[in-house]
Amino acid sequence: KELEEQRLAAEAERKKKEDELAAEEAAKKLKEEQIQFRTDELERLKQSYEDMLPVIEKRMEKLESRQKEIADGEDWAAYTSCSYKPRVTEADLNTYITETNGRPEMSLSESLECLAYTESIIEDVNSVIIKMKSQPIVDEA
Image (cartoon, rainbow, N blue to C red; front, side, top):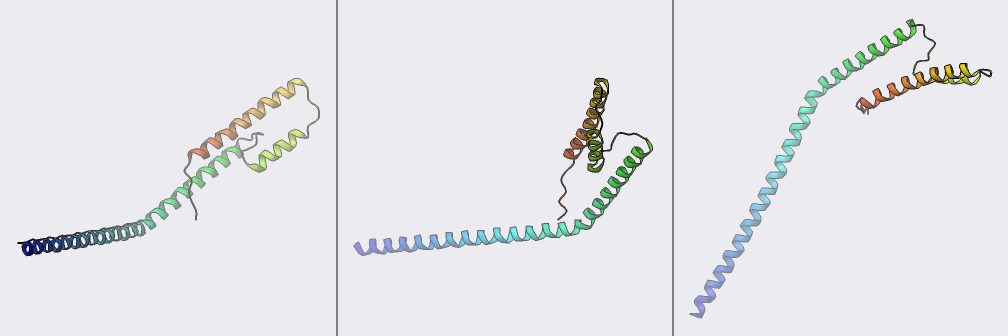
């Protein structure tokens, strides 16, 4: 009877070890399958990206071209308007500031007129800032 119990205990221990090995093998196989799936998915995504790259580049070129056309149109409109108001460029704004600081003493009415004019320039600058903030950042790297 004792021998039978020992044999049964040994058999149960062997079965337990076999089950543990089978579970370890199943977990290892599952992990390898997951790694293979992720590797295949990554390759598929890389291929998809490479396939789309010419289309993306072409669209970016069209977008840049259109933005340049719009900017050129705005520059031409500003030029043909014959306005003394500076455009929102660093050079034009610096010139305006230099000219304004170099003016002789002004009367109160002239100062108020200059102030109103300067405020309209600030509104233009703020409009450009808002427009720039609304555009997505494009990484050119």
